[in-house]
Length: 206
Image 1 (tube, rainbow, N blue to C red):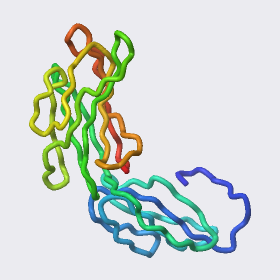
Image 2 (image 1 turned 90 degrees about the vertical axis):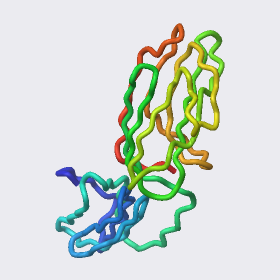
Image 3 (image 1 turned 120 degrees about the vertical axis):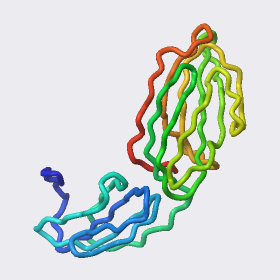
Image 4 (image 1 turned 180 degrees about the vertical axis):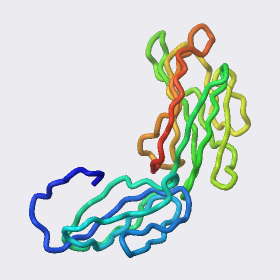
């Protein structure tokens, strides 16, 4: 794979590829001569492959990501997804005290922005804000929030900004798995400092 040899623990007489893929859009993936329809979000594909010859996988480079690949000797039943999931790629930036986020999203689920931190005074946890951003258009979502005066109407929680260190997260509503960081910053003397915008590569939020 990518000119790397991945040794197996035992020889195979036949082989199947099991791929966990993430897609932002509905699209067709071609694996050798077989085609598969992939919906937005997370999908698992199982396909037979030939022994001792290359296998070629083709999809849209900017909207598809293979997260995991397994080599199997026998087919197995793929369980249905248990929870909502979102395929997402996003990036953030700061404009003064405002955090701005641009995202491309596919799949099912509701995205939530959450900012949590810890006080510089006593390290107590701080829940600065959280809420469901405005509805996306054609899979794209752009929104911003004032971190020092969080008054946006889509926010469901507004805390009191205080000196501390903070992380802004994206997660899927009603799911309890860890959220994904999209920015970090400090508040010192009522100002945003050490602001660090992050880029979220194409991945899955569950």
